[in-house]
Each structure stands twice: as structure tokens, then as C-alpha cells.
Image (cartoon, rainbow, N blue to C red):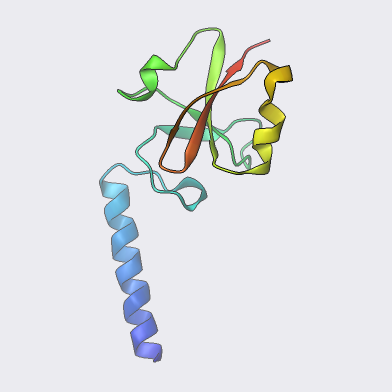
Amino acid sequence: MTGKAILTGGALMAFLAGCQTAGLSRDEGLATDLPLMGGYRDAGDACKRVGEDAFTNRFLDHTADLIACPAGVAELSGFGPESGAAQVAAKDGWVLISVPRR
């Protein structure tokens, strides 16, 4: 059983390495090709800043930050209508939110 677990762990590491070489992000355990950057409010924040690519460029705006939060994460409640934030898309288990700059 131990040898099998090691083999399985090795196979998992090879899979994850393949994700990295394919340009996929592994933030929050969700594989995605979204251009995720550091945490939105701080480095450990589950919600990440999102950069520009062919998918996200239509949601970028010079008056707002584009962020991505894992679907269902508690931080989503902090971006309600009172904050002026708006959900603009969802992809790969991430919810994209446009947050106006103040």
C-alpha cells in the first residue's frame, strides 16, 4: 500500500508540473488559465487581482480593479451592491468581480 501511495503521489506531482508548464495557475487549488496575481487586499487573501488576457480584457476598466474569488468564498459578501462591486463573469470555479476604485 505504501508503494502505491508513493506512486500515486508521484503521478500527482507530474500532473501538477504539467499544469504549470501549460500556463495554468493553481491558486486556491483551482486550476485555471486566468492571469491571477497576488491577493487583492493582502498576500493571503483568497481573492486575487486579475491581469489582462483574451478573456479578461473585456472586463478591465481604468476606474475599477478586476478580481477573482473562488466561488462560494466568504470574501464575496464583502463585495455587495453597497460597495459598488459587480460580478462580471465566472470561469473555472472563480467569480470575476469589478470593484470600483475610490
